[in-house]
Image (cartoon, rainbow, N blue to C red; front, side):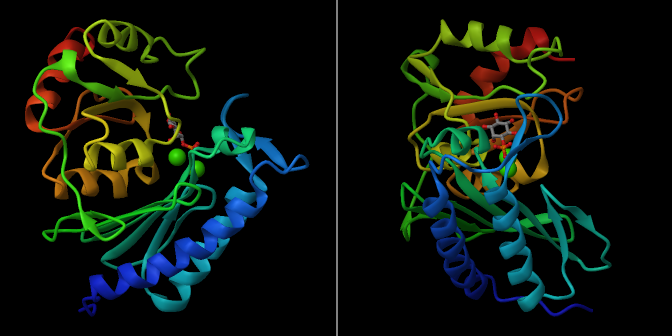
Length: 263
Ligand code: IPD
Ligand code: CA
Ligand code: CA
């Protein structure tokens, strides 16, 4: 039987870790000779800072939790028998980062027997540290946060994003975007799914939807939204992780609008 870990203590450790990794990211933001490679498509990027950040985060987890499993965006999943799994996006918002744009985040989640029990999202330039522990609420810079109370789409500002295969896949969110744009106050495309979900958790966004996401994009952010009193639902099964987030009512309204595309 594995020893249960102290989640509050882990949050404090993680805060120190992400502040440190965030310094590296801020120091290199806007550097002209930043090494950038492409991954799945010509618009799916990875920078040297993504890789260095991930190495630092993995080294930390291996030091303090050597038995735990790790699923990290740039290096994949390490085999493990542990009930614990760390899911890591070392730099969510790489397109922004490669442009010198300041909206990007570090996302780290811990699950126990398949259930997320801790989530941390940190936006270094904005100096925003979000965390949630299962059953204990969600916090931004140590203050409790809540999802918005709006109930009409026309009063709502939503966030979304587009997949890296937007140019080659028919189900690419363009039709959904066009539809919801006409029914809402505004839609924002910030470029960091983890930060979008954190924005829903603290009520800055009234809702969010996106398709074809990966576990590291959303694991921490989903817990933030749920612990802030919101709801997150899957909305289609044909494109990896596809979710709608917000308060109960707004999630239902977005789902209704997207329904014609549901499979
Ligand atoms: C991406 C961002 C973006 C979302 C993409 C993600 P990355 O992650 O979260 O907002 O629209 O689907 O892949 O590549 O910057 O870590
Ligand atoms: Ca990501
Ligand atoms: Ca990433």
